[in-house]
Length: 146
Image 1: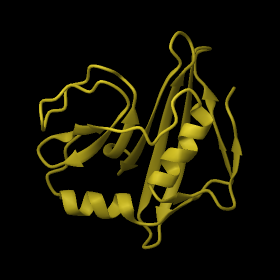
Image 2: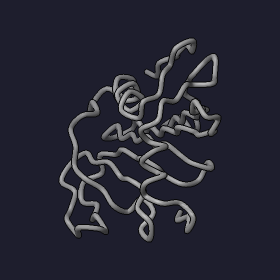
Image 3: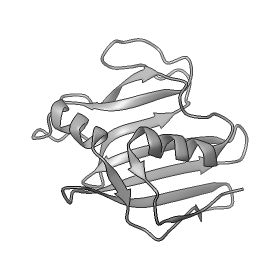
């Protein structure tokens, strides 16, 4: 989704700002026997409410992704490992894990390849993503998925 009032500078500020998990327990929800989802409420020091969502499909290739959302619908940062995605800003093809970032006019269609999120360990990858987004789990318990 594109928000015409959201600038790249403000999106980057949200991404870099210190955030704290609001929930006491962070756990995955089984959706259909093949997919689990996680919803984590977070808040910035200045009171901005955000959400982290994760999707984990453990059938087949065990794909998963994580997203930091503004207004529960605008992707500020998203990580996934889908190969073949075309970055709308540079027109390059993603050949491995990559991150999407908010860019006015493109939403989160701009991306870059990265290897700083664990592949093959969804629980560790979630912790990597939270750390990268400057989100603290202090005070919250995490119930790992299988």
